[in-house]
Image 1: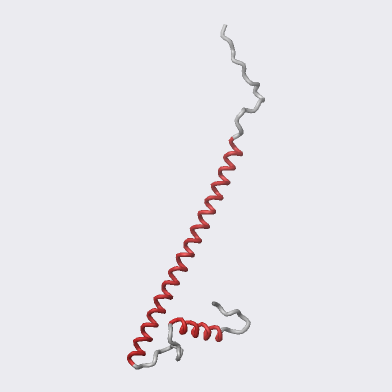
Image 2: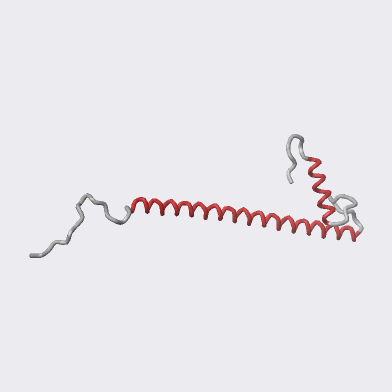
Length: 111
């Protein structure tokens, strides 16, 4: 007669953990990683946009400085630049000071 293998009663849970909690944990981890990726992508995009703005400002400043130098050599007074400013940094400091002086009262000047 064939021998039956001993089997666990039907009411006993299996030895492996149930899959539902493991799946939920993995889903949560995936959602957290997706959120982190989105956050990092947004940070990267903001950094790229800021770098592009800074590059445009530098190009504009170099252009204005070259134009002022060219006009100075030609003997015409530079347009829109403060008088007496010799260096690029001095011009920028004077422009910033003028902007801050024009800021409306009750609001912090933007820097």
